[in-house]
Image 1 (cartoon, helix red, strand yellow):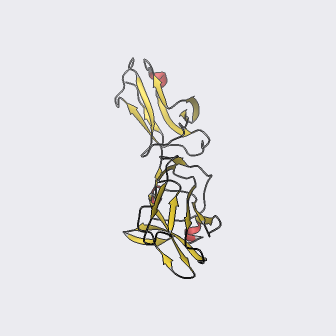
Image 2: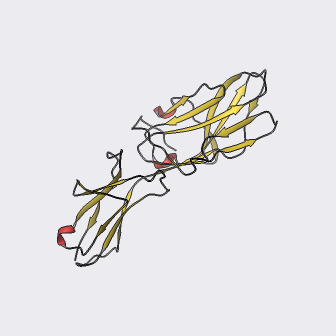
Image 3: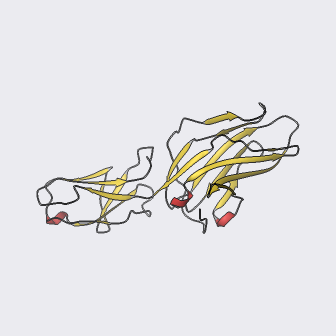
Length: 214
């Protein structure tokens, strides 16, 4: 995973908004709850991955770290790592990992470890799985002749929740707002370069796809 310069605005699309991951590992009085099991978000935005945790009375948290895996080896994502990582929360009972300027290589599972003044605790159960997706225009059918009906879909590699509205562009100009773009009885006037974005993140366009009408 490559982490570089700081980036764009915050957007989070969740696969399981109501669900949490909760488990007890080792001693029953150590406990961590990840707010979301899975998160799907757009490339170029930012994401907050959060959890809460408890530990025996008398302990004081001295260090908290978020990890991911790089080539199957744990990678410590310390604050400031690559200029794109920030820790938020009180760091005594809750923690938030913020990653900015997301790219598809950030797609991974993220887990937390914390150390108290008496021990180090490393849970082994799953954390939060992040999937970072771009947008891609798909044209159906692939070969278009005049008079046909054509469907253009703004495709992602994971399911964006909250029913986002897609904005469609033809030759760089807004043409429609809908999940899919339906062109009935296409003609040469419909030919052009089409792209899409998600409402609220119009600066994050898909690559253009050229529609050719034969």
